[in-house]
Length: 198
Image (cartoon, rainbow, N blue to C red; front, side, top):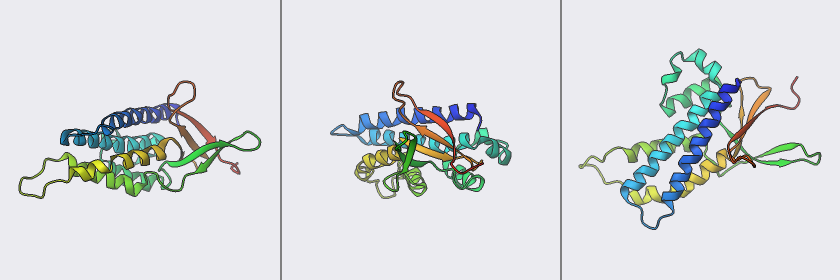
């Protein structure tokens, strides 16, 4: 992975953090209008897209070989399908960072409560539903139901990304990403060689 690509990945992570902050600020109000709920889901839509753009960053060299016009890609579902064909293990794997008895970093996998690929597709679809104007002859949207899911979506996204690994095309290496470096507070990364590889 090229260092420039890793920096692009971190840019996506920083933007996701900022958008989560906006959602949390709006979401804690006692009374939220329909327009604010739509605005929250606009942030979710952009977060979904940023997760997929970060996946392109982590696999850019191979993705570019398959898609000459990759700089114009924006459709999250299509990117998801393409990424799966290029690198089936591309999706972030959430973990809790710790240290072993020899003070070496460890990453214990998180097995549930995070935004899975299926969740990402469902959230993307929900964003599409809420962000389109309602046909006056169709059933009205249940904005309360959308709003009730906001905190759950935020938690799943945070659980996915707070600390995660991305398997690179070269199976010997992973990108380890944290969203909050202790001193700077910014997202950070390390490229880790997997044990047992030559």
